[in-house]
Amino acid sequence: MNYLNIALIILIVCWIVFAFLSKQGILERYNMSAFGPILMVRTMRGQKLLTVLAYPRRFWRFFGNVGIPMMLVGMFIMFTIVLLTDYVML
Picture: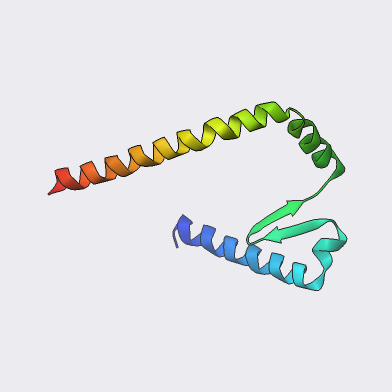
């Protein structure tokens, strides 16, 4: 058995365990929630960190306003690269 199969089996087992614990209500009791195979643990320390990080509103507004056009340009460039490589392969 190769490493990819082992990793896939571990992922599926974790997903099943998290789904079972979520359905039983055990995760909510400990302030946790499962999003597929990902387990989110809510702590006061983490909530304080998010509050501190969210404080500079002007930065996040600028980041979003600049990031969306940059993402669109990057997406267009990647699409162009895919088309060019397909054209070259003909």
